[in-house]
Amino acid sequence: MSTEPPASRPAAPPQPAKAAAAAAAAGKTVKAPDAGRRSERSRRAILDAALALLGEVGYNKLTIEAIAARAGVGKQTIYRWWPSKAAVLLDASLALAGEPDAEGGWAGLPDTGDLAADLKLVLRATVDEFNDERYEAPARALTAAGATDPELGARFTERLLEPQLALYEDRLRTAREAGQLAPDTDLRLTVEMLLGPLTYRWLLRTAPLTHAFTDALVDGVLGGVAGGTTTGVGKVTA
Amino acid sequence: MSTEPPASRPAAPPQPAKAAAAAAAAGKTVKAPDAGRRSERSRRAILDAALALLGEVGYNKLTIEAIAARAGVGKQTIYRWWPSKAAVLLDASLALAGEPDAEGGWAGLPDTGDLAADLKLVLRATVDEFNDERYEAPARALTAAGATDPELGARFTERLLEPQLALYEDRLRTAREAGQLAPDTDLRLTVEMLLGPLTYRWLLRTAPLTHAFTDALVDGVLGGVAGGTTTGVGKVTA
DNA sequence: ACTCGAAGACGAGACGTATCGGGTTGGTAG
DNA sequence: CTACCAACCCGATACGTCTCGTCTTCGAGT
Image 1 (cartoon, rainbow over the protein chains, first blue to last red):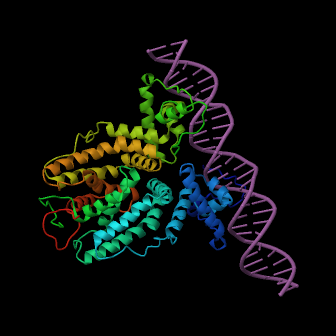
Image 2: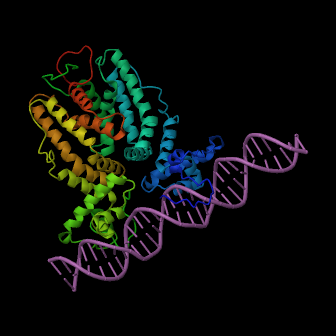
Image 3: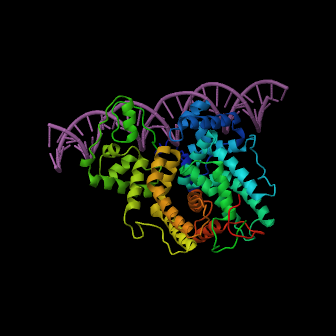
C-alpha cells in the first residue's frame, strides 16, 4: 500500500493522494486538479459504470479497474477525482437522488393536515424504494461502508441523509405547531423513531419490509404502545 | 470482504454448508475436516488475534495473513475452518458475547414491574456497550459485513441478534400480560421501535449516544408523541 | 498410518502511482 | 487574425506492491 517514493525528484517527492494531510503538514501544497477542465462526459460515464457494475457483481467485487474499463476511461481519471471506491458510489448515489425521477425531487413532505396519513404515505414510498433493486445495492453498500469509515460516513450522512431528515423535521414541526404533537416533542428523536426501525429491519433483514409494517410503526410512534395504566407521560391518543 | 465462494472448482474448500452444496452440485465429495481433532488452542488463538488486530488496524486492513501470523498458526488452519474473514469475526464475537463477563451471561431482562424503568436500565447498558471501544469495532464490522452479505447477515442475525431480541420480547410479553401494554401490541414491532432508533443513531452517527437519548426513547415508545386533544386510554388509532 | 498444524511458495488479481501520446484550452507574440 | 506554445486533462498502460486463496512440505500428536 505505502509505496516508497523513488525520490527521482530532487526537491519534490511525489505525493500519494492519501498523503494529502502529510503533505499539508509538511508545508507543501497538494496539487489540486483543475475542476474547470474536468470532463463531464467522463464523470457521468464513471458514475453510470459504477452503478451498473455494482448491481452486477456486488460491492465487494467491484473494482476501480473494472469501473474504468466499463466507463472507457483511464484509471487515473478516477483516482484523480475520487479517493476511494466508496466515494465514487457516494457521488453516484447523489446523482441518482438528485435526478428528477418521477417522485424524485422532493421539495417537502406532503401536508394534508393529517399527520399520520402523510407519514404513512411517505414511509410506504420509502419502503418501496428500499425494496427497489435499483436503489438497494448502492444504499446498502454506502451504509455499510459509512459504518466502518467515519469520514465517508460523515459525508454520506451530511449529503444524503440529513437533507432527508430535515424534510421530516419540517413536517413534524408543522404538526407540532398545529398541536398535533406535544409542545415539547423532540423532533429529531421522533424522526429517528420513524426511520430507525425501518432502517433496522431493512439493514438487518429481521423481517420483510411491508406497508403494514410502516403503517403500524406510524401508529406506534404517534400513539405509543402503553396500555391501560398510562405510566409516565400522559400523552395518549384516541 | 471476500464473501462469495470462489468459483474455482478444483480443490473444494472443506466444511461450510454452502461449499458442500456447491461441491455436491459438481459431483464432488468434500473432504470435511475432522472437527474432533481440531486444535482448541489454535481456534482460540485465531479468535483472539482477530479481535486484537481488528482493534488495531480496523476491519478494512485486517488480513487473514496477519491474523495467522499473530495467532502463530498457518493460513491454511484458518481457511480450513472459516470461509471468510467476516466469519472469523462472527465466531470471535460469539465468543465475546458468550463469555461470562461481569454483566455478561444475561438470562433475561430485569423485571421490577416497572417496564419503563427496566427498559431504560437495559438501554443505558446497551448504549454503554455501543460506546465501548472493545465492542464497537467488531460490532460495526459485523453489521456492515452482514448488510452486504446476505448469508453472513443471516447467521449474524440468527446467532447474535435474535437471542437478544427474544429477551426483549419476553419482557414485553410479561408487561403486556400485566396490562401495561395494549393487548394487541405487536411485540416484535415494539422491540424494533426501541432498538431501531438506537442502532440507527449508533451506526450512522447522526448524534451522540447518551443515556438521555435512550430515556427519551423509552418514554416516546411507551407514551407516543401525539399530543393535542385526546382523551381516553392509550389505544392505537386504526 | 493418518490427519491436523506451521510455514511458506505460488499465481491470480487489484491496488495506487507514474508516464506517455493525444487533444483541448488559453495566453502571447507576430 | 494567425501562429505558436505551455499547461492540463484524458485514455492507456507499465510497474511494483499487496492480499488472496490454494497447494506443498515437513513435523507432531493420536
